[in-house]
Amino acid sequence: YNMYFVITVSLTNILSYITLIITSTFLLIVARGAASQHGESLRWEGITTVLLTVLVFLFSNLPFSALSVASVLEIDHSNTLRRAVDKIQFLNIMANFFVYSLTVPSL
Image (cartoon, rainbow, N blue to C red; front, top):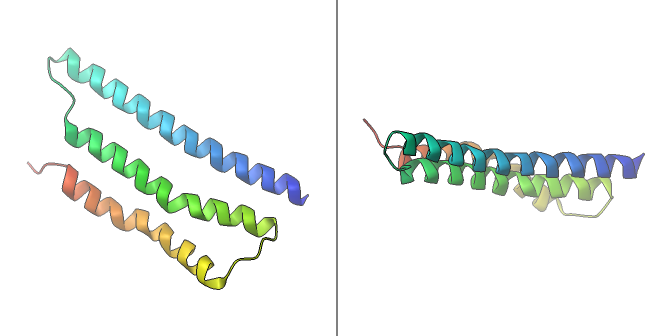
């Protein structure tokens, strides 16, 4: 049961991260195609917003995924590491405000 859970959690995390990357890539490709149909180029602000949002999300969630698998495998880790990983997840929420503020031009 333990190994089944580790494999399931690992595959689910990996597949969700891969889906996020592929979807973001397709979003940029579709946006580039739509912009070129109107005779314009894709704005760097849009590219930066998508890329930074994906990178911050991955950076904030990958440690939690690794720690979850390590916990199931009963690999020892300190409480400090656990607290740090729990707090890193909030980085995604806090960073989204700054990503959008810095990359989306105001009207």
